[in-house]
Length: 135
Ligand SMILES: CC(C)(COP(=O)(O)OP(=O)(O)OC[C@H]1O[C@@H](n2cnc3c(N)ncnc32)[C@H](O)[C@@H]1OP(=O)(O)O)[C@@H](O)C(=O)NCCC(=O)NCCS
Image (cartoon, rainbow, N blue to C red; front, top):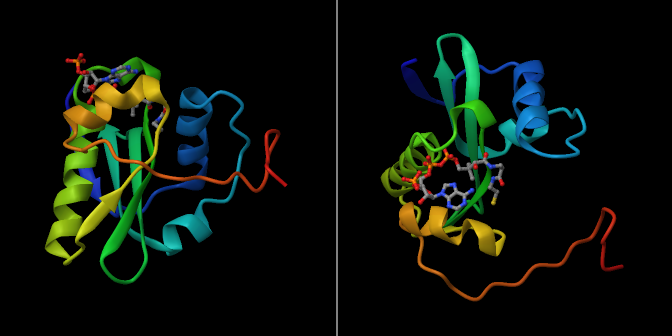
C-alpha cells in the first residue's frame, strides 16, 4: 500500500497511542498534546487513513533540535519509512535555520541512524524517572 507523509498534520491521540502500543514494548497510553505543542515539527506517515509512522523534533529555540520517538508500525518496517520521516524532519530543521540535529539511540540502531545521515558522537544521558532511574 502507498504510504504518504505529512508535516504537522492534525493527529488523534488515540491513533498515536495505538501506533506506540504496537511499536514500543510496555507503552502506556499518554496525552501527546503537551509533546506536540512543544514540537518544532513532527512528521506522520499514513497508509490510507491509518497512522503507521511518527517522528518528532524538539527544539531549543535556537541552533539545536533533538529527534525523538521515530516510530514505524511493525507491519510497515524495512520499507524506508523510518528514514524518509527522519530525512523530512532534518530538511525541515535546515529550512528553519537549525544548525544541529541531535539523537541518541541503542547500539542496535546504529545502522539505521547512519543510513539517515547521522555521524556517531559521544553524548551523555541521565535517566530521572522509570525503573532504572539514576536518582
Ligand atoms: C527504528 C525504526 C523507526 C526504523 O523504521 P523503518 O521504517 O523500519 O526503517 P527503514 O526501513 O527506513 O530502515 C532503513 C535502514 O536502516 C537500517 N535499519 C532499520 N531498522 C533497523 C534495525 N531494527 N536494526 C538494524 N538496522 C536497521 C537498515 O539498514 C535499513 O535498510 P534495509 O532495510 O535496506 O536493510 C523502527 O524499527 C521502529 O519503530 N522501532 C521501534 C521504535 C524505536 O526503537 N525507535 C527508535 C528509537 S531511538
